[in-house]
Amino acid sequence: MNLPTPAIVAQSAVRRLPRLALLLLCVAYVLPGFWGRSPWKAQDLESLGYMLQLAQPTLSDAANWFRPSLLGQHDPQLALLPYWLGASFIQWAPQGWEDVFARMPFVAMLALTLAATWYAVYALARHPAAQPVAFAFGGEAKPRDYARALADGGLLALLACLGLARLAHEATPALSQLCFASLIFVGLSTLPRWRLHSGLAVGVGMLGLTLSGAPSVALWLGVGGSLIRAVAPIDPTLGRMRMLDLGLLALMCLLCVTTAGALDLWRWRVEPYAMVNVHILAELMLWFTWPAWPLALWSLWRWRAQLIQAWLYPHLALPLWFVAVMVGATWLTGLSDRALLLALPGIAALAAFALPTLRRSLGALIDWFTLLFFSFCALTIWVIWVAMQTGFPAKPAANVARLAPGFLPEFSGLAFGLGVLATLAWGWLVKWRIGSHRAALWKSMVLPAAGAVLCWLLLMSLWLPLLNFARSYGPTVQKLQMVTGTARCLQYAGISQAQGAALLFHAKVRLQAATAPSAECPWLVMDEKNLPLLNNRLQDLGWTPEATAARLGERSDRLLIFRPSQPLLHDTPTLPAAAKN
Figure 1 (tube, rainbow, N blue to C red):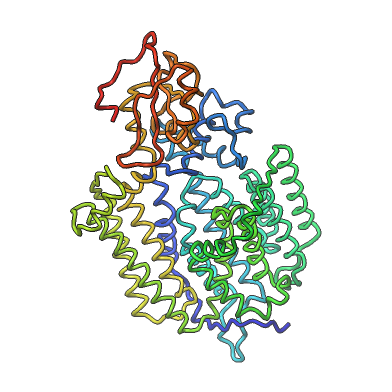
Figure 2 (figure 1 turned 90 degrees about the vertical axis):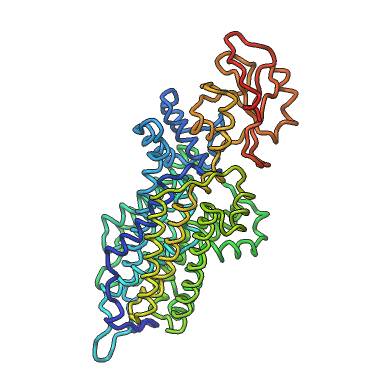
């Protein structure tokens, strides 16, 4: 059958991307941000708080594991699985390593997301409709080599997406949802080539997505993707999906519905007022999916002859369906970038199919824009780091002092060495790309992916102390402990879940809802914003303000510390007045 394909690719253009280089690029992207970073405000810290609560021996019964809570409040998303994984690893953690062990399953989830995206693009590119035009005298790209080159390009496109960096390095339900959505994607993409493994991937993905707080998304992706695979034309090399395959997929859907109903996971969080903010959605997609979205649009344009009947061509229909579902979910749930995160594998797959259709001028434009953009970003990171260390240039140093008052920079030889190695590698890659005119399909995505990895690595090495100071509650909790001393129990009133999680993690204290003062819990903390609402109530209970805990110059997230109005038996000693400032 003659298929309208715009891909014209010679065998010389599908040369193999060195596996070691690709592996090192992925490692340089995955590990920074998980290692050495304090939990940041607010979702990252809240998720750790849920895990710490679950990991406590007194809360390890089954009822609490099925209803995780923090400060007496249950998770509105009811994302059970990510908290189960984090809490299970925390129980094996040595003292002081709880956050490191809690992130271990999420490191594996991000790595699994990258691998699933690669195999999904590889499987879709093996479809006959996705293959390049056959030459009259031979020499066109072989199907296996062509699919491998596109898979490399799809993985590089995913790494290059700006929105992936921060959210994919947080131990939150968003990352687990991304991982399991990727498993659904790769499972449907590989059907019916690997029936057993594909069905297992779809089943695990749908069940994991359901237990990660997104049962509706799991059903939309699973049911819609299954229908796309069912109506696709017969592939003589792979065969067609059998009734057994469809029956297994239907069984997976039924299992997800049953699980969600039994655990009361159905929650509809549609926010209709946000539907009119189309321009905000466009702005979000513009930067969040950059630079993959221009290539994805180019791919849809160049493959438009197949797009008219896209349901017959799974290499277009399947990623397009995933993107459409997640963009719709983003639009209907308050324009959340965490929902849009799940669209990135599909957008990266569409971007990969643009690579065999790119004109040389367009590829050169991508290279030069990427070179200038990421080189400027890397230079900015280095200049500000030098200013923090030496005070020169003076203006960046003054800006850091103004934006992060009280921050004391420190030199780390390891961070400096990693930054130098990453920058030298970027310089070598730019020299290779400019000096060589290789015809490899993935060449246009090398600089975007490497530039994104470079900037993320520099931020998570050179700027990590500054970012930890600015985005964590560590300095605030240190000020609080100067007042409360070695108290192991704190009462609370009117604090956020992130503030409560910070007290659990940084102060290692037991939290108790506000009651009358007691010798076991002689201090009370409250968010300063809630003082007008709770001040009279706290006075009636016998509390009086003692001090404020906040970073120097901090106008938000200020914690008020209360002491008993009357002396208590076995009360803690009063601290010097200098500790109250």
